[in-house]
Image (cartoon, rainbow, N blue to C red; front, top):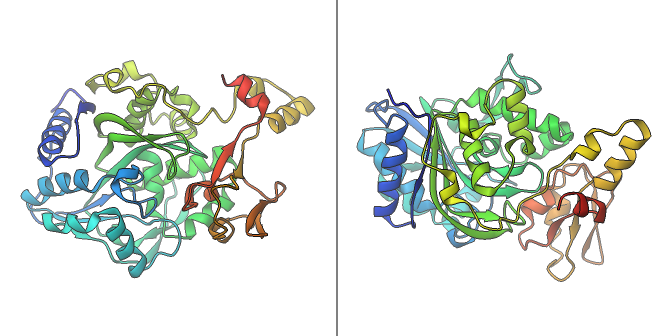
Length: 379
């Protein structure tokens, strides 16, 4: 039995040789793949947030997924790769996404790409907020799920890592319903932790060879980190990811809620970690600011309401980038966006700050706006 439960190792690029070596080192450090049995059905849950090519660093890189699939297929596993991207969850949309992201090449490894768009209702009595939720059917009969995330910033949750990646176990537009049902950011984070605990991935891996900072998770800047992260717990994987991006772990709502339940130790020094995240730190990482800072948390009554108003982030459209496609209005779970003169106008009273518009804008025209007070206090 390995002394380590998480690992971060160097991977200088997306060549097959580099990826094979990095995955073998990282997975070997935390116990390897001896648990994989011939005929075992393994679902590899990738991040396919948007149908964009690998150079944009939006999705788990297809070369990295292929390298993992080769290792699993060699051990006799029946491997299926998939995700539930935003929008319509259909066979045609999945095929387009696989084609545009370079994922069709994964079939050459012997792994399958999921085309099952069915769903089922899951019951999780131990959940904090999501005791019943809808799941994608392709995961139902899997003997094991491997969570293969992409390291990115996120407008609402601050970080897209191993825990947030499992939101893709919810089908298509149903994710928008959950945004509306759990509009409070802490409650939404609790819901994500519930999904994570229900899924219980056998392994969590993060592609951090090229990460994303800035206007993530779909329109940020690709940043080389040259690393692969692997862990037995998705929560531990996210602690390592935070260290690489210079984020205090408890600033990430999913980490904070998981720590409150005793599911993770947010102190990096207390992890059984192979490797040093500092060696792969992203210099001058442009990250999302903390959702609540001490000034807000310590306020009371009218003062609290006033401080929250001053600190509240919100989505705004960049007119020079907007093409008037109205995708933001179509996908807004709160119906808070109206198109006027081919530009989106956001009703602040209705907006729940889920940042779906920012995440799904195909042109990156939606940005996270912070007030001057928030900018000064988060410097």
